[in-house]
Image 1 (cartoon, rainbow, N blue to C red):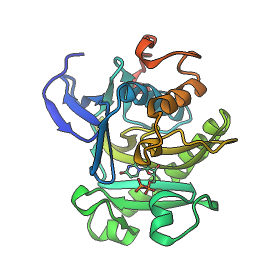
Image 2 (cartoon, rainbow, N blue to C red):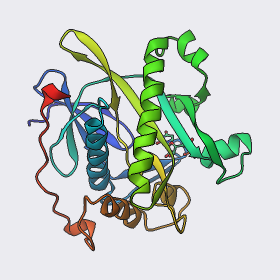
Image 3 (cartoon, rainbow, N blue to C red):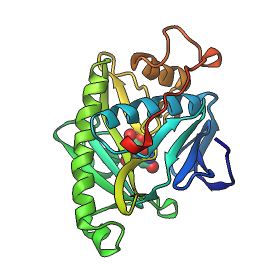
Image 4 (cartoon, rainbow, N blue to C red):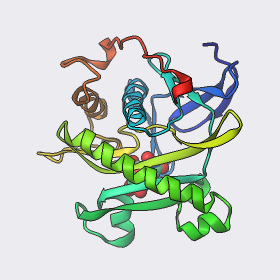
Length: 261
Ligand code: UDP
């Protein structure tokens, strides 16, 4: 797959053009950022792990009927994806209070919610991705009512599926962020899950020890970031036991029939 010109560069990923209509390449960088870009570092191997973990999760979700932008993983750092028009909203799901929610509302860190909490944030770095209501979303035309209804339903289903997937490998899914976009399928538009699902976008705690296995290791200077991401990959069964990321040789990417997606 020939990579064309760079279309967009974000904090952790780059999007490249391809010759195929409607398809682009998503490249995972090793860059880590936090606190709206105030903290930055290069974490060697992070992009490779996130590429692999996100491919695994999105493929599993797709097998459960969730439509995603993923076509196939191309190599260690790249995926072929459908070019989606991304809604300017981050969909945050919280099962346990922590992070910005605890700070903002004074809810004790670790409080388990009876039902998952869904929050919407307006994707705008200059404004620090502020929390918004559905009324803001409709008033400013960021998405329509029927689109949000579908996304809300899909997001709760993804939460159920992910909680099960992680619980099975001894991990608590504390919270996570999703993004969605619109793609053209023949002559009709379809909403798909986009971006990535990885330890960069989820909070994952070991069930027994509550050890953090996610980007909070970077945010809070806890060290061993890569080891934690590797641990997630290992538990999900996508990295052989006792391997070091520098020695990892991932298997051939699985090709997925685009028509079925
Ligand atoms: N999150 C993300 N990208 C963002 C903001 C949040 O992936 O731009 C994820 C974050 O990793 C966590 C969840 O969404 O799993 C909730 O994040 P929170 O609002 O607590 O963010 P904080 O300000 O603490 O990073």
